Length: 295
Image (tube, rainbow, N blue to C red):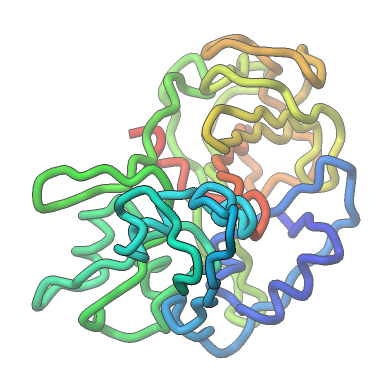
C-alpha cells in the first residue's frame, strides 16, 4: 500500500528520514490526496533528544497553551521539564520541546531495545530508529507515545483503550505492522496497520465509540472509513466492499460500519481487513502498532 499524504509532509520526510516514516506510515488527508511513495533515507536520522527546541515562556502562557502550540499534550512537556511539575509556567523560564509526544527515560544498566520495548509497550525497532540507530541504548533514551501511566518499576504507555475489536471474531494476522520484509531493500515499504484475515462480506465493526470523519474511496485504501475517538485517537478500516455509515455520524463500539472487501490495492491476495490505529501529533496522524491496542 503506497503513502497517502499532503504535499507539505514531503518536507517532513526529507528532514527526519525513515524514523518518522516508520511512525507516520500511511498518512491520510481527509480531503483526497494524490498517491505518492516516500523515499526511504539511507542514513539514520539524529536521535530525537538531539532535536529538542527551546521555548522561553511568555506572560499569559500556560503549559496547555504551549503544548497546543507545538501539537503536543501537556504531560509531554511536564515529563521533559521538571520545572513544570508544579503545574505553573514560570514567565521567562526556558523549556525544552520535543518534535513528538513521548518521555525521556533513564535506561537501566544492561537494558536492550527489546527490554525497553517490552517495558513501555513500544516496538523495539521504533525505539532503535528514534534514538539514532545505536546498537544498544545510551544512558538516556526517548520513548514515543502519549497517556503515560506508572506501573511499579516498569511504566508502560497506555496504548490500550479501544473497547472493541474491528471484526466479530478474533482474526489471524496476514500482514503485521512495520517495515515489509518481503520487499527488496531498495524498495522497502512500511505497512502502517494490520491485515486481519476475514472472509469477504464479514461485518466490520467500530473498534471504539467515536465520530466518523471520512467515508469513501481513497486511493490504495479502496473504500475507507475513518473514525475519530476521544483523546486524539483514530482508527481506519480499508478495502471495504461496502460502507453503511456516513461522515459526521456517531458510532458505538461494536457497531457495524461496513463489510470486508478487496477494493483499492490490498497488499495480500487473501481476503482481509486493513486496520490502523493513529494518534494526532504535530506531524499529523501518526500510526501506532494496532497489536498493542488489541491485546
